[in-house]
Image (cartoon, rainbow, N blue to C red):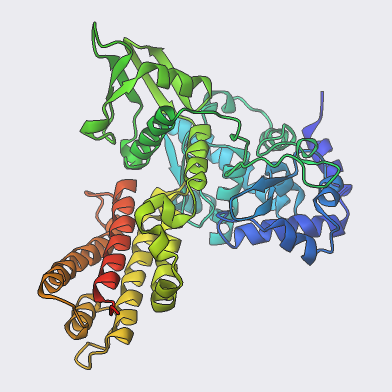
Length: 469
């Protein structure tokens, strides 16, 4: 039997400092971006004077580091083992051991505990903000969670692990953590990615763990999207399994879905699609078509994120119709700061921990509104505009007053867009301060609505006020 403690200690001792520096460089880059982005292969190779990817792969044990092919670039990513072999590893495994012990205490006090929030862990374990972030990243990469993973930032929440019952009986938590790393959680082995050219088959895993091999028909992918978005739109303290029953004789394979996050026009699904998702490990299904319940697995959440990435760049994921216009050089030159803020909010929307970032998304959209009003005033100056950038409604109205609107018909549209703009700003303010109102918690749907409405408002106002040749 492999001794996880001795094995990992030996791997650490056998890792030269020059190689550990590579792991640290990859890890620190990702941490600086809350695990939303990893360094490119080229940037890392140049920074550390590496000949190529094959050179990197040959320096570390299997499953420590792998290569991910994204649409924009090829990137290095660390697995959970790679994290523990980095300089942050000893602190991370200590935090995880303390966290798992705390989790067992919580379970003994409350048998029905389903999710854990970072703020309670921070208080219970007396952690710094940096410690909370590292713990969340360790939970995420080591998959010490249930269907909902922890995020990479300072504020996160996650479901308790599915094997909580077995965890209660683990005699040595440090060995348990190290054994998880040695079993290759968090990515394909190096042998699967290396080749003679240094760039072999490149998995497109988005959150740790290969899911690119899952093949879904369009209808099945759409079903998964409905389920994930319904799950994320439900407040954490109201989460519950999906339930479905057969519609009745003559309805074929159709089932009726019941869940608070599912809209009325999405309640009928095909039983065969659910079976396929279950077979692929994307949902955990119990029962038969006549009556069943199920949850989206962490693998299902990861595959959903990959589906969104594969749909294209950030604007494509929200609205394909305006993508070409937004990417035009003219728009970037006019409203670069506003678009940058919106793009950051949109990127967070598709993160696995997006619900925990709801207030940050609201703040970014509010900043996008301020930047857009300022930019519009640059193109349509009005000395009566209030100088306070926070008065986005009044500043935009001032810009509309001086803009050369081509016709009465378009002027009426501009007036309506001004009212629409005010409503979107109100949404952003509610979103930014939403967590202060526990009786009306924010959901993923609130974030989606705000991001989309902000995009529509900016593009339409810009098009309406442009000078035509």
